[in-house]
Amino acid sequence: MAARRTKFYLDKQNGKWMGVCAGIADYTGIDVTWVRVGAVLVTLMGAFPWSLIAYFAVAYFGENKPLGLYADRDDEKFWQGVRTNPARSARDVRSKFRDIDRRLADIETFYTSRNKRLADEIESLR
Image 1 (cartoon, rainbow, N blue to C red):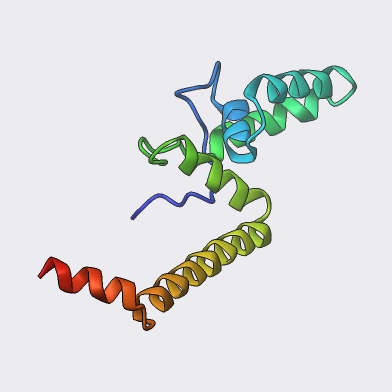
Image 2 (tube, helix red, strand yellow):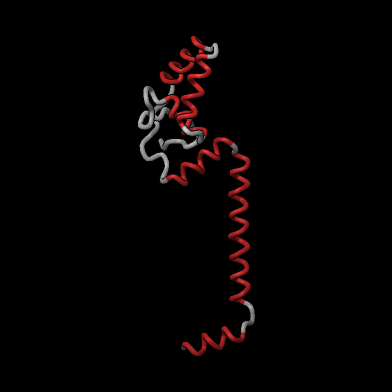
């Protein structure tokens, strides 16, 4: 089965210990350093036993990130955007397709219109 790009994965390739913070960073698009700092601060500010229990539970139940999940950095950024705001991502894709459709319609109109100069240039090339 193909890997889903909208699922949370442990990122052990970029992780320091078990890949939980790197996985959260990959899933959200936040820099991994800030995720690690946040995890330490939450733990030190009173969530000590529960944050470690949650960390180990995620490490135990989480799946490892498949190699080659993203084609390139742009693909990774796109899927992070999909995970954080799917409606905005769908709206952006629709907008790009509308723009492409409009541009193709403009090209089609230009080439199918009665353009005497263009017709003369084509005839001169024959």
